[in-house]
Amino acid sequence: MNAPLREDQLITIVKNVVEQNGCRLIEIDFETHTLHIDGPEENQVRCAIALQDVLG
Image 1 (tube, one colour):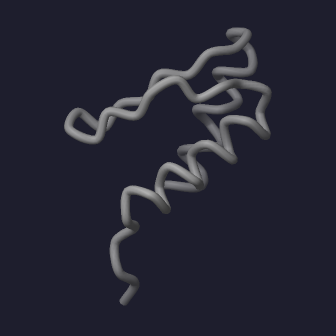
Image 2 (cartoon, helix red, strand yellow; image 1 turned 135 degrees about the vertical axis):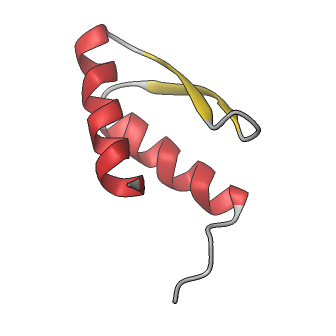
């Protein structure tokens, strides 16, 4: 069984996926499990799909 990701690991993964899809990570709210990303709408959709694939 794998241990849950630490916050710093999660930030790194999310930041990399977001940047690879042409967006910029503005904020991660760990309490509400929400992200604020900036970029063209088409890229934001790609980011969301990629993050869902990576994080489940």
